[in-house]
Image 1 (spheres, rainbow, N blue to C red):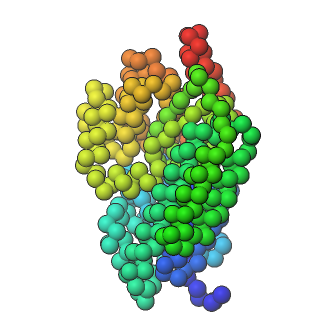
Image 2: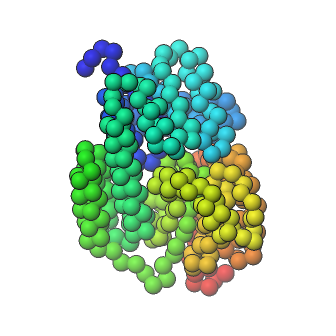
Image 3: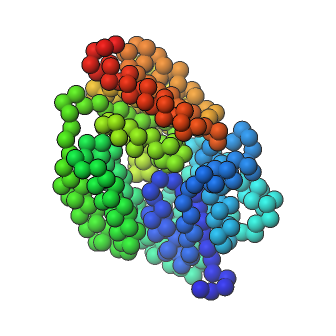
Length: 358
């Protein structure tokens, strides 16, 4: 390996690493991959402003671990709320800690050509066409991951042989990571959708369906929410979640129509957009009631203003429709035991309501 080889690190979220890595492979840089652990949040919380939200702290911890592993380029992407302004703060913190690196920030970079040109600045010798092609491959990988994960969320709790879904999913992630062209990605997606549908499941007649809404990072990064989806699945719950990278990318392309769509779903509880994914949270829960869901879980970082604003409307929806909603806020001090205990109590409530005991 070349001594001055460019090495990139970026914030981890969900199972999208292989997709994001594909983007940077187009410009010939090494990508540092370090899993999110307890140390990640400990480092992030130690050096972050106390009032910063938990995505800020996880991301900062990611950056520190990446720089420790030899990264010399830090990529930060954000937008939609105050997180779009956090990059400068994170850069200053890292510089004060003595790290030397190039900081590249993408905020609301939804124009593909503009994003490709920004990436080209990392290595101007790379053709714009190659970067655009890898961006397209990354998008296909994201779509494939989200499609598979959606099927898993809705069915893993009912597998007849425990562990089969998880084993198959791990192999899928390995294969999609290696896929280097359009044809391979499509073949892998098709292969695993078929494989997952072959797995035997048994759903009860009195199926419990729960929708998860809230801030995008804690919704998509399982470590930050203590594997809430997996814990629900173990209890035999069909889990639904709208917020994925695919839906975010799709929504920003038709931003105004999507905003109107969720405002319409949120009526009469909400008439105006309240920022980030707050309107979406209200609209999705209101719509879930009409679709026969049994409950909702609203999750957010502590202090997340768009989701705090959404909570008052969600509480009215819950009261008016006698619809159970559990609210969870996460920060660096949140206890897994506390979350698990509340989740157990919420599940018991759903069971009793389903069986007409309440």
